[in-house]
Length: 384
Image (cartoon, rainbow, N blue to C red; front, top):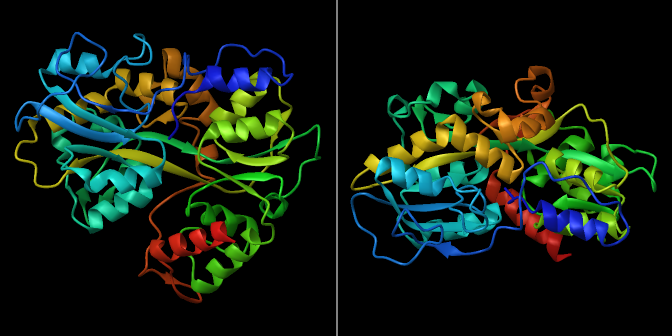
C-alpha cells in the first residue's frame, strides 16, 4: 500500500552513516507524487484535465503506485499502454496513500473501479457501493491464487479481482537488542506499528489468547488493547519513511514492517533481523467494480488488464508487494516473489489474511466485535 520510495529511503539511511545500498528491488527512481490525475491522450505520460464521458472512459480510485502512467518515470507506465491497446481512456485517476484516506474518498464521485483492502472491501459490499463481478469476463481470473479469490467471494458472488498482497513481519535492530517476543515488541516504547485499527489483530496474536485475530470477542479485544496501552511512547506510522528514519536515527528497536521494507533496510546496511513468529497477519488489495455503472465495458477491460501477468509484474516490483497472479513472478518482480514466498504454501499458511472484523460471528466467549468497535478503540488509543 506504499509506492516504491526506495531511493529516497536508502538515501535517508545513508545520510546518517549507513553504507550505500545496492539498487532497491523495486527499481524506483523517486517517490510517486501525491496528485489527482486526469488523462486525455495516450501519447503523453502526464494526465491533463477533461470532462468525463459516459462511454469509453474510466474514473479510478486506487493506492499511489498501483496505476502508474509515467508521471514519475517513463519506465513505469502501464496505464498508457492500457489506453493504447484497449481504446479506453482514463478520465480521472485519484490516488491515496493509506487505507483510511482511500476510504474517505470513496464517496467523492461514482468511480468505475476502486482498489480496496479487506476492511474497505467489506464495507463497500455491505453498503452496496460495488457490484458483483462476472469472473467469466475476466480472462486471467483463474490464474489468480485461489486463496485470494475466495477472500472477495461472498455468498457465491465475486466482488473483487485480487491484485497485490503483503504480510507483516516484526523486525529488530540486532545492534541494540537481542531479539525478543511479540509481546515485548508490542509493549515497547521503541517500537513502530502501522497506524491502522487492523493492527489490533496483530496485538491479539502477540497477546496470545485469541484463536482468530479478526474475530475478537469483547474480552479478547480488551486484552489486545491492554497490551497496546502498556506504553504511550510508541510510534504509529503511516508513511514507511517514518520507520526508515526511526531506525536510521537509532530511535527504534523494533517495528512492524512488510518484507519489502525489511529488505530495504538491510540493503541500506542496517542490522535488521526478523523476529520468529508462529503466525502473522497479511492483506490482499483487490480491484472492485463500482455500483450502477451505465457501461462496464471499459471497467472490465481494466480488470482484464490488471489481472494479466505484465501489469501484475510491473505493479508488484514498483509497489514492493507480491502479485496475486503467480505467473507474474518473472523479470523485475522475481525478487519480490522470492521475498514474500509466492507459491510457498508452508510460509503462507502461517499468515492470517485480513477480513473486515464482523459483528455477527460467534466467538467462544461472546459475540464478535465489529470494525466500528475496533476503529473507536484505536482512535481512543491514539488520543491518550
